[in-house]
Image 1 (cartoon, rainbow, N blue to C red):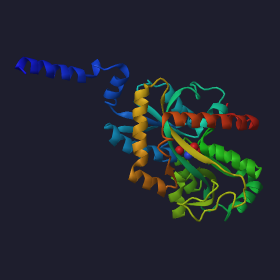
Image 2: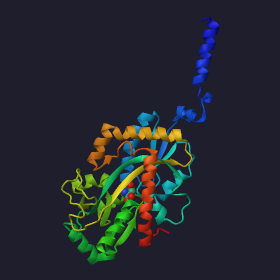
Image 3: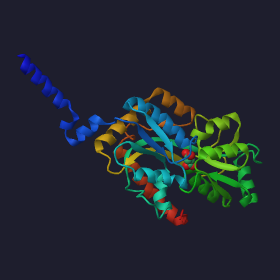
Image 4: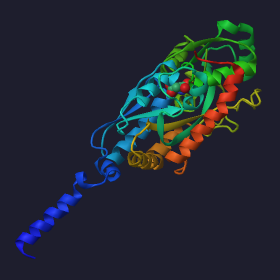
Length: 331
Ligand code: ASP
């Protein structure tokens, strides 16, 4: 090969490797990500959605080779943060990590500034987490049956904290009040992180929240726990009875978390994010930390765009008639 042909061959190889010469999808894939990615958590820092997101974001950042910054946009039961992402540029740099509220919001809110059903691309399911029914540590009840009695006797003078209409704590609180057949006073926060601070401080009486926020507080005695809301006991809190065991049969809530991008994000970018999510969910440190917090990552097959879209849409269909029958709307 002459020097000239060798140079030409090298120039051709370099040109072929240049993203500008690649077709659209391949170009998006090759160049992405080339700057930091933001994940919006639609609740305050320190709460369960925030905890899950930060653990996932840390591993995804390593896998993607770019910082993954977690931003808390709390308020209105998670709808403010979801709106921010639905209206963001669909370029793969603004994502949403939300929970079961993605399933309940479309029925709970009849007017929203974004489309809660079709406004997002699904990246994948992340985890399913049990909730716990907890109280401030000097709440005058030793178990769930006594708590039910106190709720019935003291009604509106009992304060039940939640993260706003559409939050998991709101849903669990509604189910609890309907199971107990009484109404207490609900106090909305921007997330159950700050609500937990007030529960520990004794400013509010009761809360339902994910084990990812409550396990350490229950173990240390900072709050009192009455039940876990799944049909099985939780390995991180083996002494805590299920709600059914403790006297509320049929009382079951499990919270799921999913990762989303704005509608219209390139499929190759969504696929790249999904692969990265799957790497995170296999990470040994993450799995161990999730276990300490009473949860496990979902299987790799469920952490995919199609599987999560099907799961999410089925959840919307599941909650709509229940919410409509209860006539519980946020607006
Ligand atoms: N666990 C909260 C809820 O009630 C939200 C949060 O702060 O993560 O939905």
